[in-house]
Amino acid sequence: MKPTPLTRRHALRTLAGLGSYLTLRHSVRAADSSASAAAAGTVTLGGDLKVNRLGFGAMRITGPGIWGEPADREAAHQVLRRALALGVNFIDTADAYGPEVSERLIAEALYPYPRGLVIATKGGLVRPGAGSWTPDGRPEHLRAACEASLKRLRRERIDLYQLHRIDPKVPLEESVGELARLRSAGKIRHVGVSNFSVDELARARRIVPIVSVQNRYNVADRSSQDVLDVCTRERLVFIPWAPLARGHTGQGLGTVAAQKGVSELQLAIAWLLAQSPMMLPIPGTSSVAHLEEDVAAAAVRLTPTELAAVG
Image (cartoon, rainbow, N blue to C red; front, side):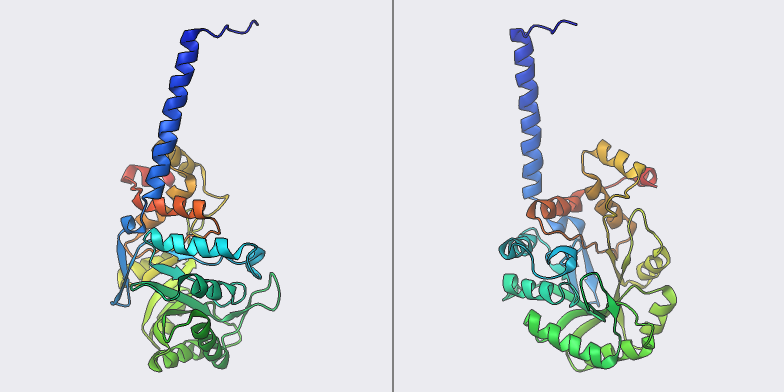
C-alpha cells in the first residue's frame, strides 16, 4: 500500500486538530488550577467544626510502605501547602504513619496553622517494623500516644482523635473510655473511631459522643454500607479510607468517566460524594499533580442515570 502524499490541505487539517487538542489540554489544566475543595460542599463535625467535604489523607507523604522519611521532604511540604491553597481544610493523619513522620511533616509545613484548619489524627496502632501494624488499645498507650501527637503537631488540643483499630486483647470499652477521659481533660475536642462495625459503634457511643467513623469504603468495597447508613441517619461524618479503589474501579465507572471526560479516580471521588451528605473523602498522594486532579473531582456531579451505570 502506497503512503498518501502529504498535501497542503492535509497539513492544515493536522495543524487545526493539534490546535484543538492543545486548547482542550490547556482548558483542563486551567480548570485543575482553579479547582477548590469547597465545590464539594461542607459537612460539620461534632456540631462545631465545619469543613469542606473533600479532605486530604496524609498517609502517603511518608516514605515507601508508609515507613520512614520521604525521599524529598520539601516535596511533601509542597503537597500539604498546595492542599490548603486548593481549599482543603481537613487533614487526616495518624501516629502510625511513618511512624510519627506524617504528623511531624504537617507541623513543619503548616504551623502556625491557619484559622479553620481541622487536623484529625489516630492512635491505637504501633509499627514494630516496616509492613507491621499491631493494635495497642491499652488505656496507658492511648494516653501516651495522644500526648505525643499533641507535641508533634504542636497543638494544645487535637480537633479529632480517632481510635485507629480495636485491639482484640483490650475491651473496646476500656480503649474508648480512655479517649473519653482525654476529652474531659481537654486534650481532645472530638472523638472518632475507625474500622468499626455497627454494633461496635453503638457500644462506643454509649461511652462518649462519637462524631465520625473512618472505614474502608469505595466503589469496589461497600462492606461498610451498613455503617455508612447509620452515619447518614445519625449525622455522623463518614470518612472512607482507600477511597479510590486503585486498580479495581470496574467497567461501569470507567465508561461513565470516559463519557464525562474525567479520570476514573476523579469519578470514584465524585461517586463517594454522591453516596451521602455525611461523606468526607480523604484521597491522599505525595504528588502535587495528583492532588490537583483529586481536588478537581469536588466539582464533578453525577446524574441518577450515571450513578446507576457505575453500579
